[in-house]
Figure 1 (tube, one colour):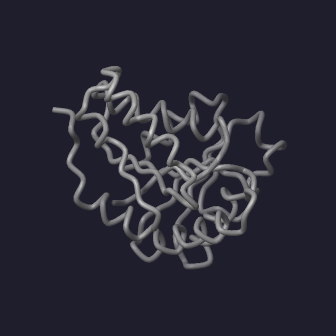
Figure 2 (tube, rainbow, N blue to C red):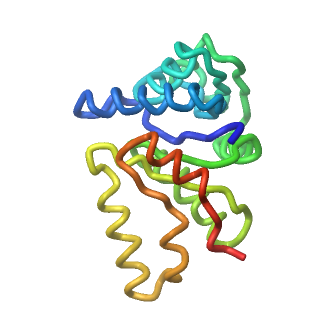
Length: 184
């Protein structure tokens, strides 16, 4: 994979495990010669994953809306920073550049980005792999919700497999290598 979009928080989280695992993902992306495409911030988990890729000699493309540039402190050492007008343009640009998507822990913005990309896959707009890096079991409630949606017939059974889940960056990226979309 040439480039992966990573959705994640601009905060550190309640435990150092979030930053540490984000850094492991960054290092793994650089080791695999995979460009990180992300929200462009230097703060929180966003900054940690970008710094880790850069420290390991990898490429990082940030995509940030103009109005967030001052608020979220855009990263000044990126390979490339793309400034867009809106959050919609940000997601569209990240989707255009990425061969797959990974969500790390984050808040409502992270989940909104993940769910939009998941929905795009569900309706057949793309066939790219989507993963949840389940650091500290952060996404267990989402996995349970997907199971509940399928059990209650609000989501097709085949759509459960659209979201790959792993607690380890290397394991999740290995799943991406073998991914085959459930959407025809």
